[in-house]
Length: 172
Image 1 (cartoon, rainbow, N blue to C red):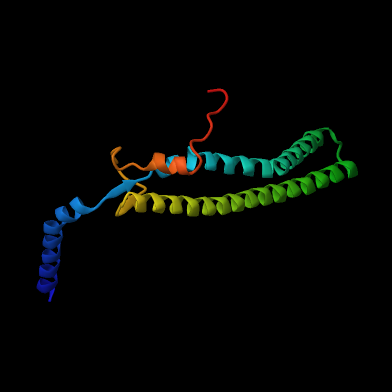
Image 2 (image 1 turned 30 degrees about the vertical axis):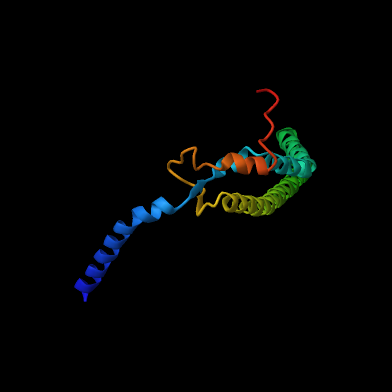
């Protein structure tokens, strides 16, 4: 039984080796640089800006609360022991808990929105890649490769379809 399985595997490997060059010659392959699509497109830039604007007021609110908590913490050493110190410590602990909750809620909401936008963007990118692949009669489009020559790279076409490259930062 073991010899039959070994023989079958050997035969399968031999068939793949014999047929692979013929398959590889007839296949039209394309490549997209996923990292560039995530970072260097106008659409990705616009999404990041939208999220930054959407969450900027909450971020400022969290930073304000953080400053308040640091101020309370700085006051604690100067408060003499007794009832007043106990009240200040309790206020500090309460504000610290509120800051933690506010910070966690902010991060959770931001990550949820980023994931939503990534899903939408991914659907759009996939549709564009499919359209380009069909127009160029590509059999396969890969996103990760050890090497991809310019002749198979369709990244620029996808970037153009996504609204072009991201704007350059002002200071560069």
